[in-house]
Image 1 (cartoon, rainbow, N blue to C red):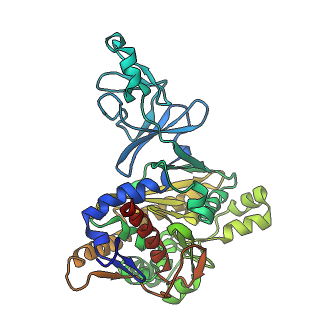
Image 2: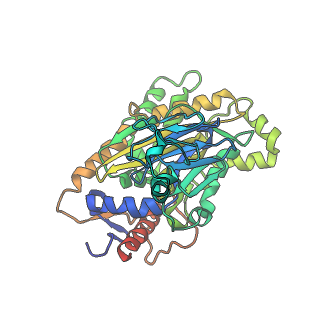
Image 3: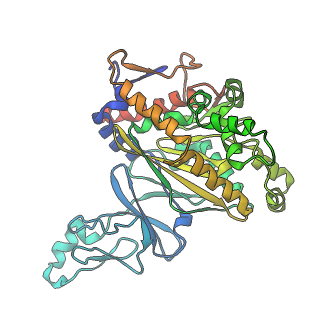
Length: 431
């Protein structure tokens, strides 16, 4: 490698995808110092409701308090280190109880009781970390019901880290006639044999759909054409067919990048633009927002928005994908769906079908991408070249301090992502 982290202009060193040492560094630098999506507040409707998740190798639990606030704790008993809550979600009631020695804690994490407490010296216990209860994550932000955490005590403030990129979340929430989203069901989980950054690269790669998905989405479109296109076009065909759009279509729809590694495809157009209207939805939006504002909200049909380091959002179809690294060569992708509260049921049906058709482990489309990731993982073992090329529409001297827009087939979003990645990796080496 010729520099610390391996990103130079239009190339990224292959070790970024293969090295376990780099992966270990990422967990304690990139992920610990970034704002990470943890959960959606609708998953915690009642006091005591909780969800558990692992971020940057840290077991965490988010709990709804009586006050309505959401607190995030390290899911670790301060006594022997046992995970206090083992289920993915549930309700802890009035207190949390460790299953090993029955230490109990308030939902805030504060130590509540210890069996046979008289056997502990009060002064000794108060001087131990265990006496303070379950440790709490201090940096938590609930942005329009999207809960984010930053595990490091130091780092960018939330608003600085995301900046104008939060407009994608705003648009997705505003698509509800009541300005509210609700998570529906459990996520689809798909384990990939690849590095997590390959999945992130793919989210803004607009030059692969018409090639990689020709045998899946392309075949669905062909079968519909061969049928004579009699009657109403099936929803599945409507969802598949935009994947086969031309290079010119994807170029014209544009791409936008924001500072700190965030960006999205689909400025003026996207694969979600021409979905058929659903009776009652437009009317409900106009009733709530007025015609001009409703038209502005629904006219913004962004394709994929990448939030550095590992979140992707599709506002127009209300899906959210969390890319969870397991190792340098293994990744789990979680695909969640959200309901537009107050919208016709048919809107949710379309979202469910999209997630099943496109993101499910049993889908027709996802396997195309997974095969490419796995072929890349194998191909990068080759000694033919040390570098991966991401230089489409590259301009010498590209800077990442301002919002930029360019052709939708540019790989600028990948370069923006790796510029942020490299900055955080180099900061780790500097420290």
